[in-house]
Amino acid sequence: MTQFTFHDENSAPQAALPTMDQAKQAFGFVPNLISGMANSPALAEGYLTLSGLYANSSLSPQEQQVALLAVSRYNGCDYCVAAHSMIADMAQVPAEAIAALRDDRPIDDPKLEALRTFTAKMVDKRGWLSEADIRDFLDAGFGMQQVGDVILAVGMKTLSNYFNHIAQTPLDEAMTQYAWERPAT
Image (cartoon, rainbow, N blue to C red):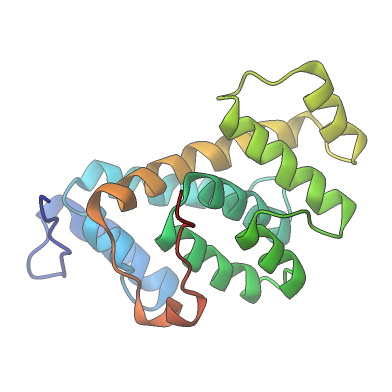
């Protein structure tokens, strides 16, 4: 398998340094995801830019993590499921909801379950949702703005999930207690 370089400030392409610095300021360290994405400075910058936009979306911090975990679980991304399990815990998503997302089973909270289901359908159907799919989401208390915000979550996570699949990004030490492995198929 082709090996990706996971860069630090000394080895990264010059164009990736501002993004790596931004990540370090945000997280206190440069996550392996960003140090690997630094091979393509545009990818690293694009991912962090989308992350910033998504953080300011109309979804609550808890809802944001539910959507990101749903995409990452569906795509089988070991790194992102661990990362967003940790962030969901920090955002006070109930532990039962995090466990349900990781296990791909229903969440007890009906609104969060509607978000999980809608997000998974969005990925599975590649955006070709039925009127009933959309109506179920709206009936759960979401609006058209949240439909767009879920699309943003899917796009953002597709970038990181696909990158992590190819690069086989190792977990950061901070995430090890949240390690997750894609079930065998």
